[in-house]
Picture 1 (cartoon, one colour):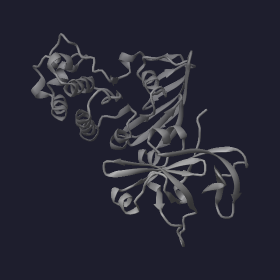
Picture 2 (tube, helix red, strand yellow; picture 1 turned 135 degrees about the horizontal axis):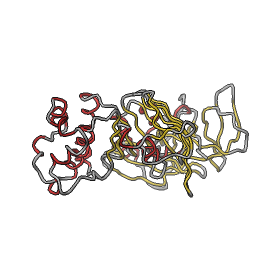
Picture 3 (spheres, helix red, strand yellow; picture 1 turned 180 degrees about the horizontal axis):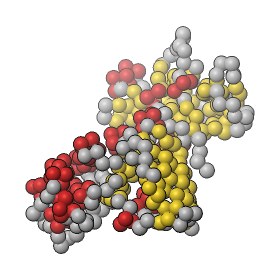
Picture 4 (cartoon, one colour; picture 1 turned 90 degrees about the vertical axis):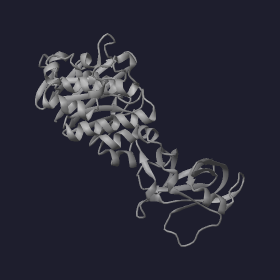
Length: 361
């Protein structure tokens, strides 16, 4: 699959302006609610005509405002599966699967039987859709889309309306669709786990703009955009003033207040300007004594402000100067340290663990 698009569309309170080129078999659109994911999906599907731009799939132009091309949705050979399966209540499962032109014949073909097998739909063919579970309904919707013989399967939050167990089941089936049926797909999600499991390539949208792109593991583990970092759960998101630089040492000093500074990777921003940085709570070590002989540039005296046990981990709040940091440690470590609110401690953070974050304006 080769998808290439550049489009813009303006609503009264929101605008979408993106450029995307992807050649992988599974592209994930990732972002928070309201970031423009579904709007972009609808533009590709032909349900929205952008104000300007061009959309091409495998060199076939689906939309071009300057070229006067706007292929209607039913002729794009795309199949859209939404959060709500939108099944026909007066038809059986077989009737829903055979709705698309040519689908009844495909349902009886080897390819159709393979779809039924992958999605475990054969036992459901005679069932009334009103009596299906949420997961079964979504499987029927995916099967109906595949039996339309699309060149690209579009999925809009396909598991968001399901509980955790059914979500895992549907995600596993989509993996089989990708690997065994080799159907290219573009899917919308706000769940990092789905992106990592299913996507070969991902686009992160924030406020209608592309905030990041690349392989999911790279985009999620070390996000470069503030919105992405917030979405994937980076625990320490800080906006701090630049207090100085050590360019030779590769360090920029960021003020924490109270005379303390955080040594972050060199960024070159002017002294006095504020920059956004982030790092995971796992990257923060907690010590009761000042360390010696460590390569970590940050050993910050602080006060313990919170000790919250969360299953097999403990989240520790640490006040360094006027800034609150969070560390994630094991219950065993918390017991050995005897951590309690009001206690003095040292927060140790490697400079390399801190990453600069960009804001999408």
